[in-house]
Structures are given as C-alpha cells and as structure tokens.
Length: 299
Ligand code: GLU
Image (cartoon, rainbow, N blue to C red; front, side, top):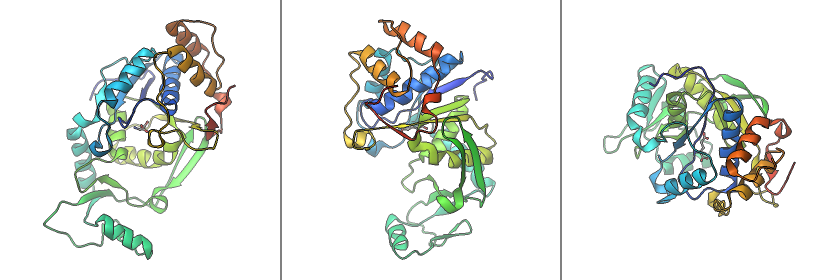
C-alpha cells in the first residue's frame, strides 16, 4: 500500500456509464475545491467494475472533459477493473475472520422470497442449499449494530446495517465485485482522508464504515452534497439522459456548478484563475442540511 502523509487527500470516482453530466460535475468540482482549499491532493478513480453497465469510451470522455475544465488529478488514475487482486484479498480477510458467507440464492429465489416476506438468510447464513454447478455470491454477515457518523453537511447519521440493508453482497455470483467493497478497498489504497460525493450515496456510507472497521482500514471524513435535481425534482443522472456538460465552454460549466454549490463566482475569466480563486474562498456551509437542490438554483 502506498505511503501517504496525513495531508488531505480527496477524490472523484466516476462510473463510466455515460458522459460527464451536471450532477457529476458538481461532485468533481466540490471534491476538487475542498482538496485545494485545504492544500491537499485530488485523485481520480474510474469505477469500471460493472462491464454490462459500462458505455464504451465514456471513461476517456469523462477524463477529457475534466481536463478541459481544469480538473486534473495529482496522481495516476486508478481503474477498478485492474484491482481484482486487492478485492480478492479483502474478501479473503473477511471470510477468514468469519464475516462473509457464500450464498446460492438466485435472483428468482430472492424475488419470490421478498413477495411472501420469507427469509432466505438467517443469522448470517444462506438457507439455500450449496450447489456444485455454479459459484456462490459472497455476502457480508451484517452485525446487529448501529453505525454512527457525522457528515460535514448532512449532520449526524445513524444506521443499523443489519436491519436496514441486511447481509449485503460483496461479490456477485457472476464474479462482479460490489461497489461497497471496491470503494472501501480503494479509498484506503488511495489514502483518501475525505470523501465528497452526492447525497444519493449517503445511505451506502454506514456499509462502507462497517467494512472499514472489519478490514482494519481508516475511516475518512464524509461530506455528502445535495443532489442536483431538475425543475420537477428528478435526479439528474446518466440513466435519465441528463445532458452532458459542455466542456467546450469550461467557464460557463464551472460557473453553473459554483452557483449550485452556493459559491460566489470569481470575476476571473481564465479557468485556472477562476478555479484558484474559488478554491481559496470555498465554503460549503450554504449547502448544510440540503439533500437536493434544483440545478438552476443559484446562491
Ligand atoms: N462511482 C460512483 C458514481 O459514479 C461514485 C462512488 C463514490 O463517490 O463513492 O455514482
């Protein structure tokens, strides 16, 4: 594992499922501003662990758009598709410590069970019989324990992972790694000291903190930004065809994102100076307690 100084290290971790849209730009810019405001580094990670959902060429397009916007990483980009050995090591540690168990339920079993409120996992065991014809999924044996943390914008949070989400998947039966496991392993690998991302991931954070504890990894600070929604209150996302950010007019795109983040817009016309001034003054307090914000809203 790389040797990281205790200095601030932030990150942006896009999934290559489409081009950079406004909601992702907000997360990228806010994480960059936090890092620069604290004199820290900013890293990039491409979360390409789900080939069926991947859109060919989008990782390259996202990185190119970020570069045009003046948001460049301080270290080489980590690609999760290259990190299977690290995820396997983490799963083995969890298995050896009795925190993970194999599960042979099919999606059909799970749907049928849900329809009749029938339990398929009890006391951290899968009730489906082991099968020799296909590999199992691996699930975390979720302890009955409240995970509490203080989010920098959303305030105190508390979740019992067992009663809220249950024994969640670490590795799917088809071999794909879960976002939760990969994210935790890589936040530690990249030495991340603060995670800045959208509020849609707030309820994943207790699962991630639980995994950090079970794996003996440090827990970063968390700051969950309001989610950009359209005038109808719908999340802007690649899946509902939110328009791509126009990186050919970087100043205009950055100004929209700064307004969304409740920041004053510096007078500077060049992107580098605009970003530097915005970083110096960056203060996310106008966003405190906001879970969503319309993308047209300004400070
Ligand atoms: N890859 C996730 C996404 O694009 C973000 C993960 C994270 O920031 O933890 O929504």
